[in-house]
Length: 488
Image 1 (cartoon, rainbow, N blue to C red):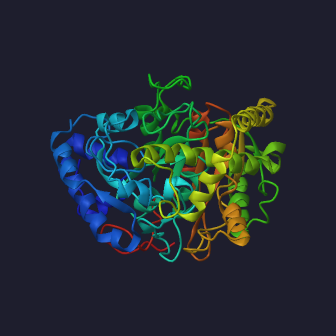
Image 2 (image 1 turned 90 degrees about the horizontal axis):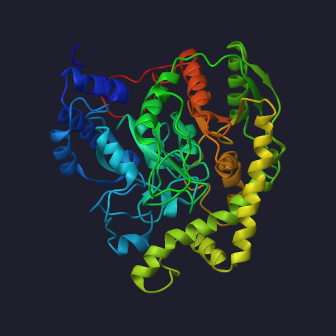
Image 3 (image 1 turned 60 degrees about the vertical axis):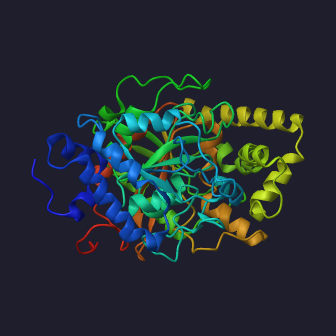
């Protein structure tokens, strides 16, 4: 295999191609890591995507990685998985003030390292991962490489910005209410939120404790996501909620014919979301037309639950409990409840709301999640294969536009991110696919939701769309690597 001519060629490679270079001997794992470090240092000053660097540890790991590991030497970044000895900020001043150090490496990170991935650092998130943009008071705003005046979304905003700007080919993300799909839409990248129990969450979380959340990756290719699923997913002895093993490796789904599918289209969001931006409608309409050209039956239909306002009601009631769970560890370390000055106003308001809830309230919310899921899945049981929606209600918002506590800011925040949470409630797998760019050059993703445990189908259709409308050649003006900007 010929050696790449320069850093731009390495920057543009996906994880599968990067690992192939290491296996062939064309480059070493150390060279891949050093090239990625160089890109991060060249670009991150403009984006603020990486808030903790572990370069020396990464260099030592790259020097020892097995060249035949599936993703040997592939540089990456993490968001909210545990690495023993590393600091964990949770986007919060309270954690930073405690100089919080992780005691163990969790299952997800162990599997990442066993696969050969080299973890270079940790990415920017909003406080307690509780916002659809990444603008914490602790670390400052993360910026979108397509337009630094705009947000890369949240809560995996740092991961999305890092992948889109070619710092690294893949970055770990998580998704409790759209936190992986929203950034993927904002930056023109790909992701799949897995089914409930599909990826290990312990010890930074657990599927039985936080039933709307999952961990995943933001990538630039479908095949990277498929291979990462093969390497990282699977049973975790610490979990009690576990998805069944796939019938065959996910990597084999890339390029496999999906058949002629029955696909519903939702051109509006849940009740109360308000009108979608024309860019979001253009994105979903173009995707629907393309799916029709590829032989699928596409019709405007969706589960009634997804068009009601119930998903917003559930998330607004359930998310404060997640905030409370994140607060517990810091409160125990401090020996007192978190209060003003410890947390940002929106986070503190959710924590105070959670403290007013009773055990009966929690039980009622869990029952509502169960019934919402049962009623929603009936649409797929009736013979539909996929649901197509916009991934976000618009192109990326301007920095600060969604940060206020006033009613207008909160309504704008819901219009931006409110199309994602229903798949978190039901535990279904959902992809954000980068098929559309506005006339201003901003990406707007589309969302595909499959039946529970049908990641295989999402991968087949996403790969089919990637082949029909390739997106990896689209790169933002702020990026690592040399070479002129591609014009499209």
